[in-house]
Image 1 (tube, rainbow, N blue to C red):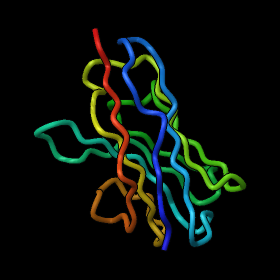
Image 2 (cartoon, helix red, strand yellow; image 1 turned 135 degrees about the vertical axis):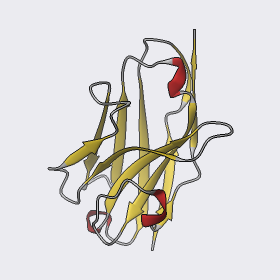
Image 3 (cartoon, one colour; image 1 turned 90 degrees about the vertical axis):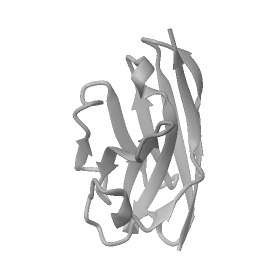
Image 4 (cartoon, helix red, strand yellow; image 1 turned 180 degrees about the horizontal axis):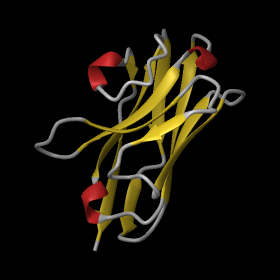
Length: 124
């Protein structure tokens, strides 16, 4: 089992940047594929990005490609989401998730563990 705690959310103006962090504890962090998802009010949870166990392979949703970057540090047991050129439509609660099966999935149900989420609000 792994416990996940997100941080780094907040209020930012459109065009600005934020870096989210997700600290993991428990079972060996490098055993998990990690993902970021987000959920805006009244909408389904949406895939944002995923990264493989070593950090060598990443995948990003088309809506954030070129603006967001997922990365991980297996020594610090942390996964990051660097968000640049933020838009109003990026406003959501952002969640990190862990998948022990190593699938690099884009569907939320394929992830085994979730953090509590961190709010990101982009203002005009």
